[in-house]
Image (cartoon, rainbow over all chains, first blue to last red; front, side):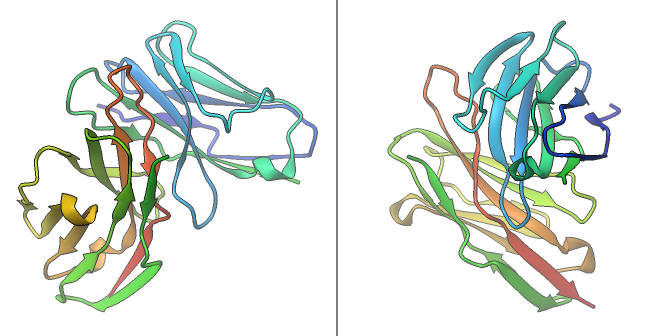
Length: 114
Length: 117
């Protein structure tokens, strides 16, 4: 069990640029989640995949945000035309199917938009 | 709408003291799940417990215990004989059981616990 891996750990970008983050979940987990966390706040749900299907999206996920999980393994989260308000920690989590629902989180990608 | 309130923003205790972290939730659903997560300085959220709304039995795991009271919509977390390694931000979270498969967790703002040696 290598845990949930997120890359990069830190990303600094200029306003208006596009950024892409990657998440590699625990290999046997078929569920994958993206959350966003700003300083002093709890994580906020963005989206959820079961295998390759994106089953749930938050209202927070504007049309500048897109997430994919093409083969039901790794996932990418892209933000187009970044804004300063997008600055946050982006967290990925995965879990297996079943009643336990124990989410394993990665260490996150810290995005700073200048 | 769901809401989780953790009124304590920061708590400091001296090592070996007991400490209780409060969590109050709001939901219209009769069936739901409650969680506690720990976020140490490294940033990775660590699952601590999941509790179903229909199971009000309190749970103890080592130095950790949880008190779930449906009547007051509270799910409090107690650490007994605190240690420096307990220093972290602790989050309470809620998920309803929509039956349609919503897996969205609603988190509180967290309580930062500092255990002083």
